[in-house]
Length: 341
Image (cartoon, rainbow, N blue to C red):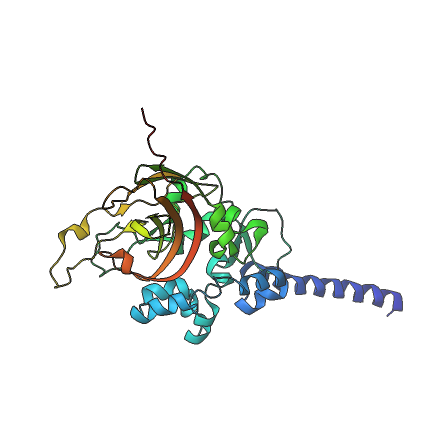
């Protein structure tokens, strides 16, 4: 055979083989999903940020472990270690909330619509609602079956709070993942928590009045699990800093226990849950009662964001506190004596 004809034939065959080899790559890209450890190969910076996050420590962090030791239920594990269905238990626990818990869809990876096009080696679907809807599964849900709570009582209500807020047009990621940061640092950052609440204090006799207003917060403050609350403290102190009177008010969702200490059912446990958290704005008044006049006493106040470990709904002041962030504090001067006629 003419060598030139042989080269032409070989070129045609190689081209055809190349086309056949390319087809499986395209087919695989449409259906293949990476493992958790494979995500970091292309997304190293994101993986490093996630490794510092509360998502990664969702199961292993000390706060959750204390609560889980009291109630080791699959219901809790489904959000704090959701990969139990795919991974060995110890691996799922160590992983916490990984890449696929948020981004894994049916036969594709799901992400936001920040840009168009993709050179990803896997299927990819861009969803404009992803940056909010991906959060819903673990940040809004009812009490589990068998809890005794009426259906619809809701253990967490963050998503409906967001829809009712002045920032409903913004996604969760706009605030909690600035620059697509996967460390989710704001929820445990004292400075971020302090920026979230504006406080104006004034004195009305022996009463403290606080105007509370959230700043750029797209849900109630605080939001999330049952163990977060605002504690508003006030006290009257004399010139020697001796306390003459004090009071405290807790702003939270107030769940009534199902039983009295002696085991009797509490009928008010099925009433709607009282909720006095800050939904945009709130006014709080604390009346401090003293024996005798206290007009010359200073009023000392503070607002703390508390994380409760063991709640006592009947005596909230005795609840065990694991973490406190001081949001605001101040002193109001004594009441000037009335001028003589």
